[in-house]
Image 1 (cartoon, rainbow, N blue to C red):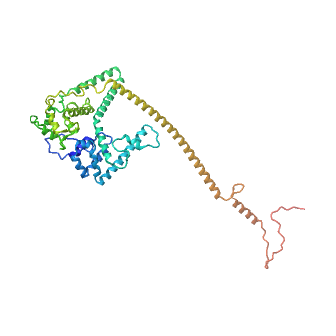
Image 2 (image 1 turned 30 degrees about the horizontal axis):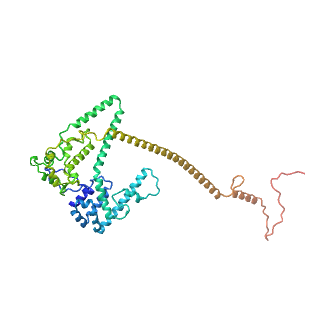
Image 3 (image 1 turned 90 degrees about the horizontal axis):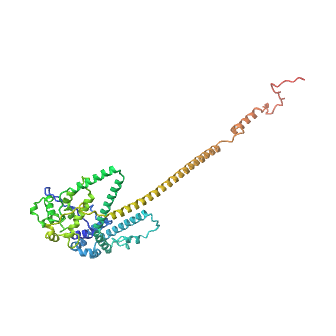
Length: 454
């Protein structure tokens, strides 16, 4: 990664490279690669990274990055070079911007949905104006103005990032204290006294740790020189130390490379295996140490420490005779009682709002259940009606296929056949002579008739 690109990434885009402590007892490690998951904490972090990765593929822009200084980057003069990059680079940047605009639209829609804002049509152009890292008036192509806005916005946001981290930690501490007090309220007097004693014992155990050297002091750097670098502390050399911990060789120590120097000091106070040690507090302590060094060493406030700045800091009185470092346990709480009370009031309001929403959802759920029952009943009635209609159709079809029946239910054609048979049995056969003429024979009296006497 080039020096100019590194400056751009750190000052305006903060594409960080996490460092690994050097162990002299092991074989030389392979060339370290940037940590892909390192996050700037900005909500447009991915877009920011992808834009830089695409720009880095253009030889002309990469060359300009190598010769650019901090002012060129911060004031946006570098963005004018965008007009000279290759067509394939501009095409890819256009695609990235359209993807980012689409993502922001989804964020806006989700935000509006979460606030129950009823809006049939959203004016995306107006809503996108709240995002300052791109030009909302042009949502299809990536222009020089987009790069300028991205650099300026990222620089401003990163300058406020530490303050936001402190505020986040304060809220974390207030929430922890709130939960502690609420838990103690739920206990009877005997259990509460026992729990309070246990908490005090944990706090005292946490305070029992070795002396913490002031960050950036000769004692602290010599300890890293000895424990991490495996070198003789009596042979400590600031220039050699700087080059050892400039792990990417760009000529400056960035914020992450500095924070890596404080690991040994933090391990004196915090152990993830100990219940009494809070890892969130450890990260806050790391941030405080880095800010302390930057205030004393970073003379031009570019969030980087050059070799010249580093060497000048070793000439100061504070370097050899620093004040004793006060950890979070030695300082005042990060919040006041008034701030805690306001925080608890906010929590109460949020809990009430969540309760109202939960009740509304419960009522809606009950209504859905009732509607579901009604629909199920209608479904059963419909199925019953369909079955009855089907049965009637089958009966009608059966009737249409049967011949007509008589008065007693017998088939009509059987009745007619029986009638014809009876008629045939009553026909009298007349004899015919040889010439085909009927004989005029007297009819014989019927047999078996009763005889009447005169």
